[in-house]
Length: 282
Length: 299
Image 1: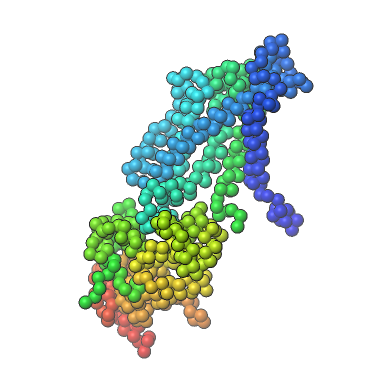
Image 2: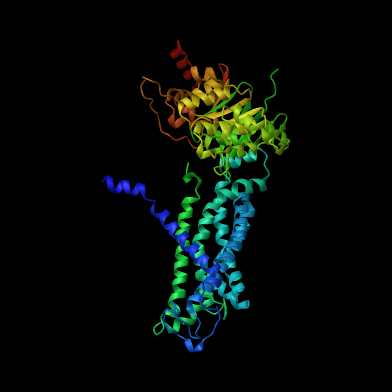
């Protein structure tokens, strides 16, 4: 029995290895998106109707779509849109959600009640339905998708941050700071916020995949990115009717969504461990 | 004429969410060290939080000098009264130097190494995070942070309970040599004996006995004080035995210690009023009997 035990001690733990793999995959996706103009074999919007629906081969690794555009090129450029949407939605949601949540958690009382009741109102609507409604009211575009998703996303961060901050606010180091006369905003910035961030950061990394999927869903329904913007969800929507005859049109953007969402989930699991200071290397 | 106590609780009732857990406690924090003894859940820490201004009384007043805490100059109060919580009360994300510096005005932050040195720590440790220090070192950092504002009174809440006995002894030496007044909250009678001239024993949110520490521990007049003393394990002695049921009687139904008291009688169905007896204050109908038994043990 000594062998397996020793092996377990030598190898990194499974969640850490998965997180590492997730990190590497995300880095690859981000690099591919950033350097898309250098990596893409063709211009993003070059139409070649004569080369429509070519299967994958040496000239077009991922094949071509209905209007002869190179799908590898579109997947690389599509990463830019999807990652930018995810970053914008998560940054906006986290900024609003965490700020309100930490204030609610630390202050307590009526202020917490008011903030949490407002989040209840937003959470009462199914997120995708609310996003759809907003996207219909506003002009369909990538920016609209960002606003629509962010509006449904921030209340989760508020609730999470409020519960963590309420717990942090009772820790002795917060009491010690109060006894030293440190002003409340300073206590929130110096102690409550940093010590409330770990679960929020984990949640953000876990949510990145969900945001990309939701943005893809909005585009798929015609309410997000519009032609000729390259976006994975839009590409899946445009290729769905061809799945049985020209599988590559829908498969490669679909795989890009799957791999990216999965990578963010793996990274989120790993962050949970890495950001816990008690688990830091001594 | 006795000097005015720095802090005084006057018929203070404290609680959380409208439910009282400390009932009409009156207590002076006098010179020479004051101990607050009792088991977990007896209300010691709640009372300490009220003395620190972290909890507002449901009724009664906390006096700071000749003003209630509500009306007092909080800036002066914060300079005079500082807490020393357990070693785990440092922000895990802050370097310990930053934790100590938080207590100092910006212009005085250069004093951090001096303060760490004052509590027997290597100033080089300022750059470490709490989890990189031992329990004893962390406790010293907590003390250094409290000393940064040169307080007159330290409110020490179980400052040594998470430490092993040898480290405990060194931290106690440090506390004994500080020269500040102290209110010590603990369940460790040996620590109280060492640091406090006066002690108060709490049970179920009430003071049951108050007086000189040496008298209280040598000749307890309340059966709970005696039970606490007898529960201390002794090397080579018989293991201590708990007697009676573990819970207290519900509030407002006579003496709270009645369910556990081996001397309970019918009179204990009514709540005992605190009274003076043999140089201490005790709330027990059978105090004379407990005291007589203790005197018999001593002689």
